[in-house]
Image (cartoon, rainbow, N blue to C red; front, side, top):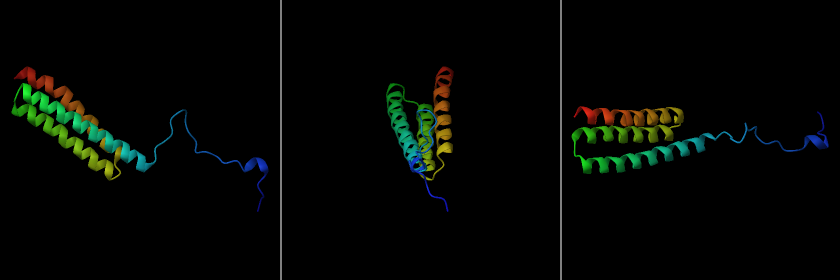
Length: 107
């Protein structure tokens, strides 16, 4: 057995890289779940605004898919699949942002 010297008794902090430190799994689930919920609210407001200005089944379906994907991201975050949840959320938003102008131009 070795005795600790006085200079070895200092507490060490977890290694951080730069200014960012890693989130614990619980914090990551919480952050990504809240992010997905905020995106869901924003998509719902955008859907109401778009549907009020131009009622269309296509608009309703497109934003409905975005709402479903946001809900899926929340469920995935709660189950610990945070990276997959963010990928689903990002892909869903990208599809809505890219598909809406294309669908409106073709109508």
